[in-house]
Length: 94
Image (cartoon, rainbow, N blue to C red; front, side):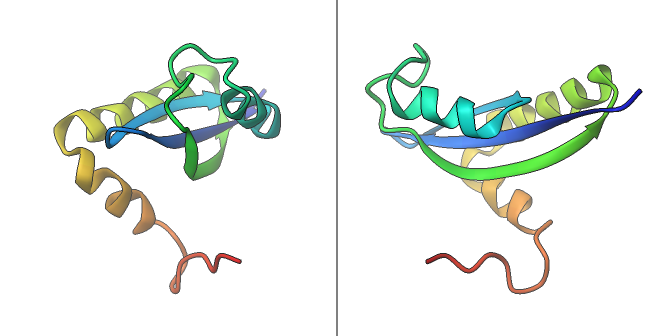
């Protein structure tokens, strides 16, 4: 049976990123924004990327690890590579 999860990336104060996955993106973001997550508490977390993924747990974890590896190798280029997967024109904010 396939499961649904969300890969997400938060920007943090100091120019760092936090990469993780969750089954409930809205709840997870609320917890980060309210300061209830130790890794992002007091670091002004801002959602900069999320992507719905469907697959087996092992496949989902591989996707998260791939994104973490991209961050470790090239933090500044990570979001550019993720954004290249967006439809032509990207996202319109506001």
